[in-house]
Amino acid sequence: MPDSTASAGPLDGHRPDGVSGAAIDLVGVTKSYPGQGGAAVDRISLQIPAGEIVMLVGPSGCGKTTTLKMINRLIEPTSGTITIDGRDVLSLDGDELRRQIGYVIQAGGLFPHMSVATNVGIVPGMLRWEKKRIAERTDELLELVGLDPAKYRDRYPGELSGGQQQRVGVARALAADPPVLLMDEPFGAVDPITRQRLQDELLRIQDELRKTIVCVTHDFDEAVKLGDRIVVLGEGARVVQYDTPAQVLAHPADPFVEDFVGSGAALKALTLTRVGELEALQETTTARVGDAVADVVARARAVGDAAAVVLDDRGRPQRWPWLRQLQAEGDVVLDRVEDVLSVDRRATLNAALDAMLGSRYGGVVVTGKNDVYEGVLFLQTAIDAVATTRGGSGDDGPVPVAGNDEDAARALAGEGAS
Amino acid sequence: MDLWDFVAERREQIAFQAFQHVSLVVQSVLLATALGVALGVVCHRRAWARGLAATVSSVGLTLPALAVIAVVYGATGQGVTAAVSAVTLYALLVIWRNAVVGLSGVDGQLLEAARGLGMGATRRLLRVQLPLAWPVILSGVRVSTQMVMGIAAIAAYVTGPGLGGLIFTGLTRLGGAGALESALTGTVLVVLLALVLDLLLVLLGRATTSRGIRA
Ligand SMILES: Nc1ncnc2c1ncn2[C@@H]1O[C@H](COP(=O)(O)OP(=O)(O)OP(=O)(O)O)[C@@H](O)[C@H]1O
Ligand SMILES: [Mg+2]
Image (cartoon, rainbow over the protein chains, first blue to last red):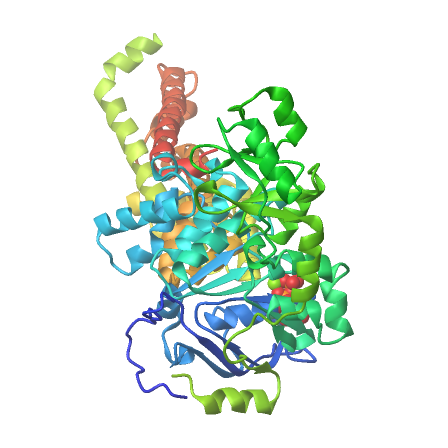
């Protein structure tokens, strides 16, 4: 392997484009346990691009966890090569390697006898950071995962909710700023609502950090939501499909994947599209507080609108009244806050549709930065837009390699990792 | 003779015996704790070794104290060393078993999390396993301390320091002058000192157990 620098320097993926993750290559990696028929993981080759979230999904016992744990050598591969950032991980000391790879397990795996701060500071402590630096880093990380440091740093895990524990688990894994994060069903132990929130937060954190994240899940919807790419594995960690969520949904490789995707693939694809990407926003009549109602009505009628969006002085939508409502209220547009149905342009189409179905107009107001009005989205235009973008690849750059045969292994090994 | 007079007359001697008794118990328990934890660390990972610890400990505890003491004296000769050995042995049986139970009771997920963070075997033991097993180990220390307060008294029967002397000289001369008082004083002091030691161990437990795992 192209491991000319077998020295003990840190794994590092920091690159000018904001990607702090490192590429991971598995080449013909096998794990077999003595006394078992087939291998638990059978010659898997997998190229994981730097800075991406790659989700491993597949039926129970197919080798997801085994594959994941071989990357940080919690499980030693029987054969094959694994490189991170071009360096052969098998040539490194296991413990030192693991200090440079974040690892998150179900329920966080926090040590109950250590405070939140102590838990988070474990790896920096082993790396002999100064006390002060560890304390600062701990606070910074708690902040990052949405926990007020002043309130939580001295608590014990038993004094936290499941979701909070999971957050601390993520903070602990990120403590020494590792280029790679491995997660094994990280959100499997929390309730659905908390899970959604944690997923959203992980995406937000990833936007900022651009780590390379390998995450095992048995929840296909989670894979679709979180993954830049999804690896669908079969028995013995056979790569059945390695693709973007949109592709897996639109073109499942075979009936096995189709089965795994489950029903409603098109509906699931809705969670992949952001409102802002649709280019289906429409203009509608807007009015400012204090405008003459007669003016507004005239403008609206001219373009055929039956309602107008009222904006406050900072351009944020306040309400969306029918014209006759405005007329009934008086001569000028009143300063009244009603429950306007609006979604952010970064919201998923799924969320927008949900809002539309609850709206009397069959549409929803879309806002941008600082909640400023951008336009409206109607059900019919949304559906039309989905129909035209469906199955669109949305993919750029070379397609990473994956497989369980010689070809895949050779493609990866031959290509050279750096 | 009045019990109070009996004590008042022999104040210094009794205080000395009480001191010797406690000193014997504390030293033996300390030694047994070190040995028990070390043995626990060695044994807790393998099922057969765990079984061995449980069996040896429960069989050992059913043996009559006097017989064991006699055997130990036979082997090591008489004196303080023999008393310490016998008493340590008893304390060890309890602490060893508790150490094995406590260490093997640590959640495997946590140990894997520790490994996943890059903690080596020694660090895992010192920073995760022992602190988590500590309450169980400490309860073994408490039980064994109570137990060996009595056993130390028996040890003194054969020979050795401590309050056992008072008890047994009293019992053998029962009916004689001051015999009852002697036995009573020894017994009451053993009980009182046992309570005091237990209280101290409770305080020690509070001071050394993380707030996160305190019941
Ligand atoms: N220590 C072990 N000894 C023997 N076989 C093992 C061991 N660990 C895992 N296996 C086997 O290897 C295979 C893959 O296990 P793995 O834990 O990777 O599955 P998984 O895909 O993570 O499943 P799940 O979704 O249930 O967590 C299974 O058939 C399992 O029985
Ligand atoms: Mg698993």
